[in-house]
Image (cartoon, rainbow over all chains, first blue to last red; front, side):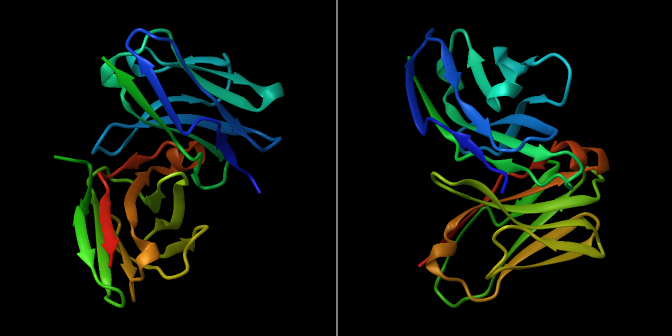
Length: 114
Length: 115
């Protein structure tokens, strides 16, 4: 069965530190990949997405992610985090033409200390 | 106003009670979904509906039922709530393109506690 794995459950950083959150998926065919963010007390919002083309995608608020097909990975990065980035981050994948059934990773809680 | 609205936002109930969570959307999307979120498990799909007459089970549908009353409304019911159904429940929508690409729009969540 297809799955999405996030390696870190809780990451604690100081402001201005660099961030990289790992995400791996298990499917050999065409996938669409996403990072969603959930700020405290809020609903999930799309941070960025990869469908095809340039494997380095840029999202909102300075986030970017790199799709590495050979590693089945889609890691999220940000050069310098801010306190306002404190949130839970979910990696998700959908197999093309599978009706939007997103498969979510377990989530990574990011805490940024001021 | 939110495009995807869930009610109630918080509910505490007792084992054995029937609970309904409601979702309505103003995005005009034809596809709607119910997920539950549990710490350390991410979000898991309970049910999804492609239109009013098309309802499908997700990966964890046991103990739940749904009703698509109209294109804009999709309700989730727990016929006899049990404690391990304590979770945060999210409704989501997508249009047809979004259903193929995975772009969903989420409601703000309904936190359910079953004692």
